[in-house]
Length: 212
Ligand SMILES: Nc1ncnc2c1ncn2[C@@H]1O[C@H](COP(=O)(O)OP(=O)(O)OP(=O)(O)O)[C@@H](O)[C@H]1O
Image 1 (spheres, helix red, strand yellow):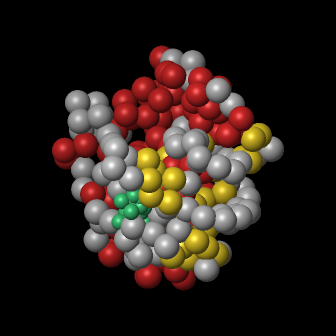
Image 2 (cartoon, helix red, strand yellow):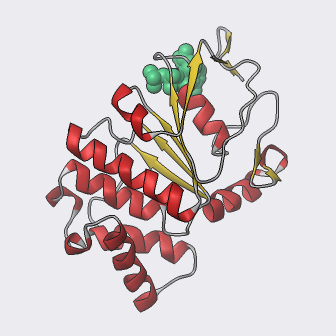
């Protein structure tokens, strides 16, 4: 993968050959600038690599048109980001319902499913709270519940514990671990936090754009 700017072209990822396993939590670790977010974005179909191919769930996403790729993402992938990316004016439940609406699940069905998802992450009692009234760990759980709305087979998380204290971070990782094991989802987490290593089935090290 290369990034071209006005003044130069930077090669960021080289010779990446990576296979992720269903039902497993993978940590992607490495120094700042080593290319972790770039790799996550390529795997999630947000960035198209300048060379090479990405096969996800039997589909070569690098050969899809941008519209087909968006549809594929919507149906199969769940993203969790460190900043939570919640809509501040919507309650915890409504933040999930908007995603369900995109999947053509509306009204009472969407409400019931949102509560079910919040229950799964242990905060159904906060369904009517606005993000500003939730702790960091609770916001991250809403973000995870939202990422799970369509039962994705691949969950990509970029520094999901960076904004959390130690205990909330551990709970969030346990939750992702349970999802991998119970729902058979593939989980890939970008992190700098070595404490998460014990929760992972596999640690992938990236250095200077190459797998170690
Ligand atoms: N949109 C972009 N345009 C040009 N260069 C970029 C762009 N995004 C990232 N880079 C460069 O690519 C390299 C890898 O960046 P990336 O964000 O993938 O690293 P990272 O390992 O996730 O870093 P960090 O741990 O600090 O978040 C860096 O040198 C960065 O400056």
